[in-house]
Image 1 (cartoon, rainbow, N blue to C red):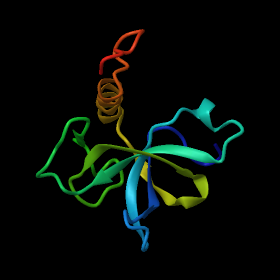
Image 2 (tube, helix red, strand yellow):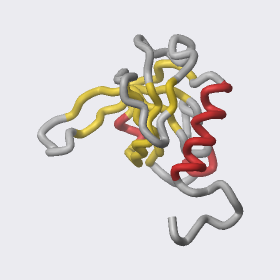
Image 3 (cartoon, helix red, strand yellow):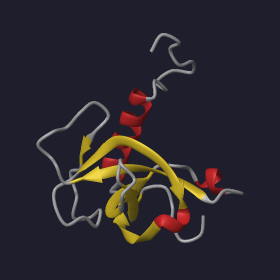
Image 4 (cartoon, one colour):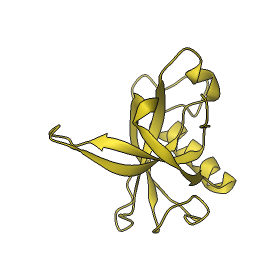
Length: 121
């Protein structure tokens, strides 16, 4: 993927749930560099400044300024695949410690904690 890497915090166009418009929002790239080979998509986790509600799979970003964010923020368990062309620009990079926690939250949320995911969920 040219110009972006896993862990980059980017500004992307999120389509409203009712598909009536698009709003620019921050997100963190969670897909691997290998994923991009031959693809025009990127996998991202949404970021919100709503820190009063941290749900399962979410992570309150410790060093949000270093990540290029304007406000205290939460990397959410809301995962989307989108076209790379929907990335407006790079805001920063998720600090290593925060990205490590996000990785753990992804493993937990997707039940990837062991070599075999639970079939019962």
